[in-house]
Length: 98
Image (cartoon, rainbow, N blue to C red; front, side, top):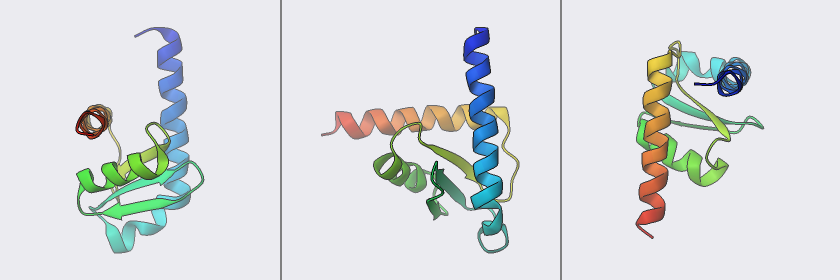
């Protein structure tokens, strides 16, 4: 991974962390363990199903325009990589099935 890509990734992680702190943190007491997608303007989608949240977020916010987390849990690199792959798969399937 090149320095530019690494720099962009770090910037995105920082932005996602800020979105979660601002809009997701307050969901922890009522929705801990569920999944949330948070748009850049603070709109949220919450569900117990990660697939459902990702599908709705892709439809409503567009690919790359939201932070995705499990509520009440720290995001870790491996989790982010798995979910980035999942978003790509869902996005591909959605448009190939049309």
